Image (cartoon, rainbow, N blue to C red; front, side, top):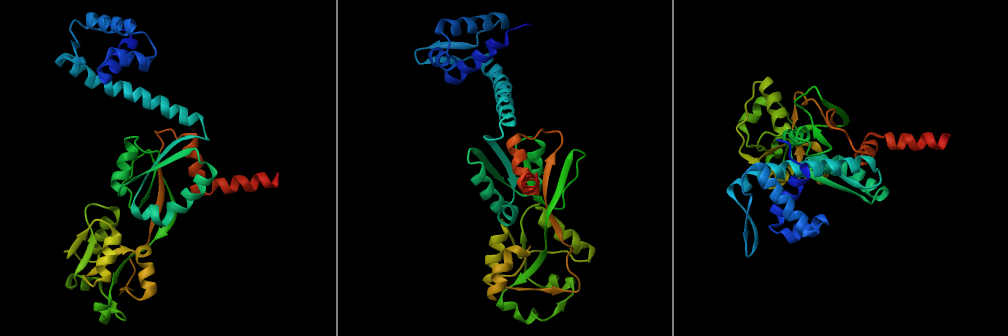
Amino acid sequence: MDINLEYYKIFYHVAKRRSITLAAEELSISQPAVSQAVKHLEGALGCALFVRTSKGMRLTKEGEMLFSYVQRGYELFMSGEKKLSEMLNPESGEICIGASDMTLRFYLLPYLERFHEAYPKIRVTVTNAPTPETLQHLADGRIDFGVVSTPIAGRPSLRAVPVRSIQDVFVAGRKFSELKEKVLAYRRLGELPVMCLEGTTSTRRYVEEFLAAEGVRLSPEFELATSEMLIQFAVRNLGIASVVEDFAAEYIGTGELFLLRFEREIPKRELCIVTDERIPVSRAAGKLLDYLTGREAAGKDEDEMV
């Protein structure tokens, strides 16, 4: 069936605004032209798409079904146009990043501050989610790139660039001070009230896999949504918190918390910038990636040498 796609565009706007008049204003065409396009589309499809009422245009059941498909397709076209415009304009546009609380706080923030000062017209939004969700957002094309912590479930198109090391630790408050000078075996954790992140975060999975290799299976006293909450619970002596050391550094410095020592450290992990080679990166996002990976500074150095 060969139907002018312009009819579907007009149908979308009439259905969205529930009005011939408002759709005509939005499209900058005449009301008769909008009405004629709707009639042509209804004739070609062989059914009524709208019911005319005193309050405007109401979709029929057939119209509602068709709109559910047209809406997705038309808005996807609009997103594509917007993305193309952003790719062609390095000085404006929008960048969407996926990041967790940890990667945002301990890596991204100072870069975002400098980038915003250099490119104030580029809008940056951050989708806050743990590593597995961020990787899914990247696969779905909802973000330009992510900053996540390893381990990362690999896909052939995924490219991960390590940018910073992190250390998983166990910390405790003054109530557990008898453990402070001891070197513990990890099996001792089975006798202690351990607190972990909830869900399937990369941090939780990594620590559990390491402990499983040590023959230890945790039964957490508390499972909490954020590392900051774990720290606050540990400060109040509610248990031994499994966190990345950066979250506890301030409290270790004041003496409110201390690091538990074990026969061997949990191996360090990495914070990584992840991109998907299937998804083109806009010029604006490329500039931010240059900041994050140091290529921006390298470029400036080369310019100064010329």
